[in-house]
View 1 (cartoon, each protein chain N blue to C red):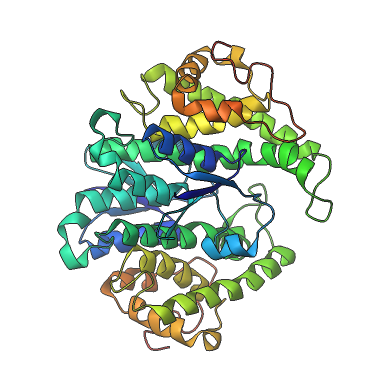
View 2: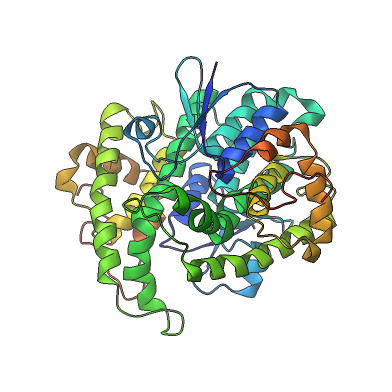
Length: 230
Length: 230
């Protein structure tokens, strides 16, 4: 069976796991600690990014961008109205723009610093950079959460799904990021009622179940994390 | 005519300009200073990334990932052996992996800090963060140059072009990054003779000419920057 190297608090890993499940793929999950930079892992993916998919012929596919495009070309294209990319090139461009927004911009502004400070540092040794969170970094990331939730609220209010009429990669990328922030209790849902309604729909998909059942060592999720009706 | 908002020292802008010229597109070039964050520009692309392509119907396409995929779908697919992405999904994955390597990893480790410290800070006001370069950041980026040139040397030595037998997006992404570092005189070509032979081939393409003729205010290029036989 193919293997997916992933990490539970990595947005890109969650994103690809959601795609695989939506498309009915089975892969063995192997947890990789992003801060460890294992030699064997770097041999698979010199960039060191997660996730990495290793197929039955030991060919590796590295990172969410390569994987999402590969899965669309080899499987999405056959899925008709369950395809997670559109057919029209401009519509595809909009899905990709938003996917990149959540996997890159929101990641840099918000998700990566919060995960690092609040989750990874609990698990890292002192030599690896572990320890208490840096309160200045937390403050900056938290003030960025509001801006990103405003944009999500606007998108959710203007369209049925974030990039248009159909569930797409954009929703899975946003859902991956939001689910991590929600685990950490960093989202004030009262501020974003339309985004909340969108997230309830995303979160209720069967593909989300495994993510909602996972727990990070030494860090309990927010009380409503796994509730579909929160 | 369509418009491309770009910046001469932005790797992603150079990458997309190379694709457009290779495919015979004409676009008006409008220079955008990446540090200015103009409101009108952010209205076109909320992520604020370069380049942005505005077509004749005022539809915008944002950033190198969206643009490269869009141009492949709408034009590359008709180019047969001049197509800059392959036909085989695994080969496409390898081209995308390397394109991302040069536009993301090499950019973060090397090109962005060197451009910011050595070129942008010369043009920015003090309020914008201008001033002399930070010598610690320069030192780190310069030590990363060696690692990246080693990888480029290895790639150039193993394949005709970086991702295989044909010129691809990977070569244009690498060429975009390398040409900026070469402008800044940051590459020791004696250390990388095979990469040098590859770069001579890339640099000799007609699509490279406009880039080699450009100059950045207050910063002269290295003496061999525009030489095809350096």
